Amino acid sequence: MRWLAMLALVASSAWAQTPYEITVLFPAGTSADVTARMLADGMSKHLNQRVLVVNRPGAGGAIGYKHVASQKPDGNSLVWNSNSISTTYHSGQLAFDYQAFDPVARVLVESPVVAVRADAKWKTLNELMADAKARPKEMSVGHSGIGSHTHLCLTALFHTAGVEVNEVPFAAAQVVPSLIGGHVDALVQLPAALSGPVKQGQVRLLAAMIPQRDPALADVPTAVEQGVDVSLEAWRGIAAPRGTPKAVIAQLEDAIRQTVASPEFVKGAEHLGVRPAFMPAAQFGELIAKEDVAIARLMQVIGLKK
Image 1 (cartoon, rainbow, N blue to C red):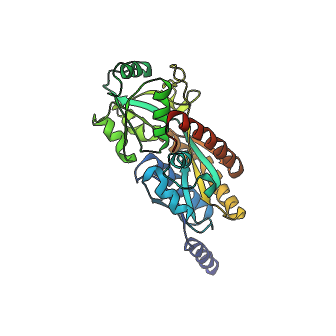
Image 2: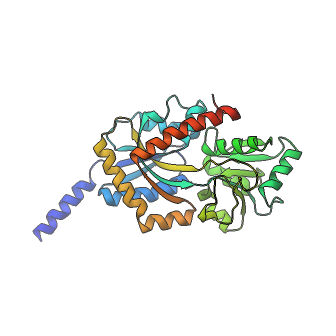
């Protein structure tokens, strides 16, 4: 019995250590929040230490990024980052870029989609575009806020098609209700946020903005298939303040790798319409740097770069 008590003491003392904290850039209940909590649950088990999720939304992610960048680089303060680190910086809402953080691991990828209400008259992206072109700036299309990845996707999509629409920014939690409530004609959003409404028959997906069809969205044609050459896959991952010890990064990376490969995470991701896509720290950092250049160039072309 004595050895059982000792084991319990060791376990409880480990659990009592300062918890890891993942800052989510969007409100509770959003797809970013749900997926972050799935990740945190798995990481807690593999690290034998609590991993908490704290929501710090606002300014396209700038508020959350600023908070984490200002924290001690000891690995305890992490950010659930995304392509928004580049869009927020290049739109002028953030004074520093991705180099303020050390990449830990990519976790998943998502396919930005164009959605309308299920009872809308448009059955294809081409029909939507033709109608929008016939009445410039009259069609309203929602996105998740200035500087967000969905803002970039929306502007790039309609700019490439040579169509002018009324772009309407919303707080992340308001985007989908705005469509269902009839406040906008369409929206560009990530599929996890639309999973429920699609299954309930409230929303129809017209196009996915990726190079090839997503197996999780097999019935949704890409924008490229429909003649609009725009592909802007979204990713989410974990980053830490710059200067975090490499040994700490390696420990966190391993916990993420094990979590993303677990049946629980895979099943949860499938339910939400996102794809597990683990990428180690070094490769993830290369991806972010390469993509930052491409995003800056695109934002310059479409008039979003400050």
